[in-house]
Structure formats: structure tokens, C-alpha cells
Length: 260
Image 1: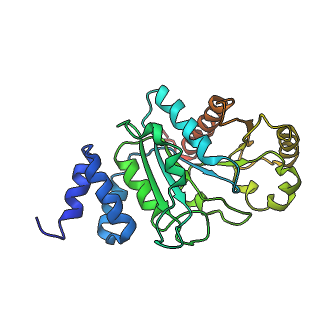
Image 2: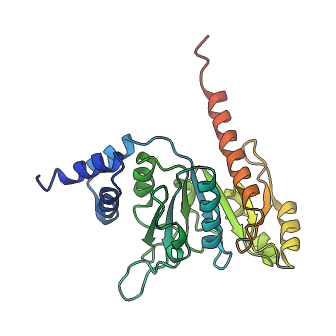
């Protein structure tokens, strides 16, 4: 096998379910694959639902994603997670805090978790995140959850890769809502107040309900969850699924009538 043919062989094996080939090709992609390989991967996409999970540091995103994966597996889904971690100042690699929280899924062949180092990149994602999502889509994982690093008002790159954006906020965030209203809240398709067992959660929920506005015929729901107990996780998945159906309906309504 020639060196130039290797990525194509890895792609073929990845699409056939070879996890080792998938891992190797993901590494090739993150280190800078050729445009030809990226185009091949993009052309093999199956249309998986991509869910972005974003929000400020300390909101409990990783623990919540772990709960989401468990619920999806209970429903016989094959989820993948792309977790963008802060970078090590020494090696430049991912610190892997997110993947450590999801260790219970490591032996499940129907779950794939990939950590990526942000390497100081602004926006909440890592270089090559979109291509990684494309390959996981082509490999049959659905949905694909993209968890960003902790973000602020204007770090909104997740919008470019996600069909549905879930913004996770911690209790007590109510006083900051006006500050992020023109950024983070604008891109939210679903709003989630995590750690809902804490007393400040009710106040944050109320402030969010006052602040949200419809977007393209969709009213972003506000869901309360507790990653530590699992409370509200099923309701969060239902809200995500409702948005997926809303997007599908919008596409169908925009399509030309073939019977005309």
C-alpha cells in the first residue's frame, strides 16, 4: 500500500465499522488531511443530527453529556461525542477532562468519544472539528454531540457544525443574561439550566423565560436538568428531538412541490 493510498483505505475500513481505522483516520484529519480526503469524507455523510452543547465554564456540560449518552444508549441509539478540551500548556494536547467523565461508555462499541485540544483557538472548537464530525457521521453514529470548551458571549463557532445548539447555563447566571443576550442566547435552539437542584436555578429559569425570543418560527424551550441525579435529561432530549423535527419540516416546506 502506498502512503498516498492509506487514508482512502482507512476511510473504506472506517465506513465498514473498523474502529481502529476510524481512530487512525481521525488522527490524520486532525493533523491536516488533504482536501481530497476531506471531500471524500464529506461526500459519505449520512445526515446524522449534530447537537452542539455549549455554555460558560462551570455549567456542568461534560457531566450532562455523559447523561445524554446513557439515555441515548438506553434507546438503542449510536451516539458519538466530540469533546473539545482546553490544551495542556506543556504538550499542547487535550487535558482530557471531558473524556474522563465519560469512562463508563469506553467499552461500548456503539459509542465513540473523541477529545480534541483547543490549542488556544478562540470560538469554542478545535481546528478540524467539522471534518471529525463529518467522518463520525459517515461512520454511522447518530446523533453526534459536539461539546465546546467553556465559552463567553462571542465564542459561537459551534453554530457552523451543529444542527441544534443547546446552551447550558449554571444556576445564578441570571444577572449575566443581559450581557450574553446578543451573543450566546441568540444562537440557542434549546436552553438548559443545569444543576437544577441548587436554589438559584429557579431564578435563572425565570430570567431566561423573560429573555428568549422566537427564531425562524421556533420558540427555544428552557429545560431544567441535574447531571448529578439525571433529572430533566429525558426532557432535554425531547426538546432536542423537537427541534430536529422542526428543521425537517422547514426543509420539506421549502422544497419545491414535485407534483406540480
